[in-house]
Image (cartoon, rainbow, N blue to C red; front, side, top):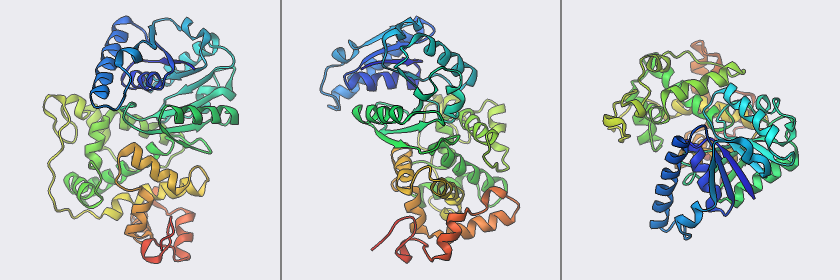
Length: 388
C-alpha cells in the first residue's frame, strides 16, 4: 500500500515510521527540506534504538529505503491512503485536505490525526466526504499501541473497515467510535480529569500536590493530573479544552491553565508549568505519600463522561478502558477503577459537587439507573462489568 503522511513533526515522522516498519511504501510531505531532514534524522535514531532492543528485526536502512520525502503535494498522485499530521489549526488542516482532495486518486482514503476536531468539519472541504476519517495515533506512535478510529457523519462503512484493518496490519489496536464526538474518547475523559483536578484546587479542597499524590499513590496512575498536563503541554490542554467546549461540551470553572499559558509557562517544554523541569526535560515530580484528596472524587467527572459515552452508544466500557490503558498507561481501565471504588461513591461525589453549582457534574441517566438497580461495582458483583 502506498501511504502519504503530511507533516513530519513528532506525530508525522512517528506515523511514517510505523507504516514503513509494517512494509508499506511511505511518502512524507512538509513545507521545507530543513524540517524533512530533521525528521529523517529522528526516524533513523528511533529505528536504530528499536533495532538494538530487538523490537524490530529488519535493518533500519531497509525500512528507511521505503520512505521518500518531498515538499510538493504532487507525490499524492498515486497514493492509496493519506494521513494528515499537522498542528491542531483548523484552517491549516482545511487547506491540506483541499490539496489532497485535488491531487490524490479518487479512490484514496484521507485520514486526519487530529486529537479533537470533529472529522465532519474537515470532510466538508473535500469532494470525497465518504472517504475522510479520523485516525488518532498516540505519542510516540512507534511505541503506543492505541489508535482511535473516528468516522464522520459522512464516512462509509467500507472506509471505516479499511482503516480498522490498516490499523491492525501496522500492529496497533483500533478503538472505533460508532458516532463522532469532539475530543473523541481519550481527550473527552482526559479533559474531565483535568477539570475536576482544577476545580478541587481552585475551590480550596486540595492542593496540586494532594491531587497528584492521590492520582499516583491511590489510583496508581503513572502521573498526577497536573504532572500529565505539564507533560502534554498546557497550551495543548487548553486548545483541546476549548475545542470540546466550543462544540457543546459542558464547561467547568477554571482559570489556572489559561493563566499558565498566558505566562508562557507551558509545562515540560518551557521548563516550567505547575512544576519545574530544569533544562526543559521531564523528570518524575516528587510528591508526598499522603494526600487528603479522595480518588473517587478525582475520577468522578471522568467516569460520568465515560458513562455518557456508553449511554449514547459511542463506545462500550471495555473500549473506554482500552483507550485509558493503551493511550494513557493506566494500570486498570477507568470504568474498572470506578467499579472498585464503588459507583455509588462516584455518584455521591458528583451530586455533592453539582450542589455547589457545577452543572457538568449532574450524574448521567446511566449512572442513576445503575444505582437504582444496585449495580454499584465489585461489591455488588455488577457495575460496568460483571464479577463472580
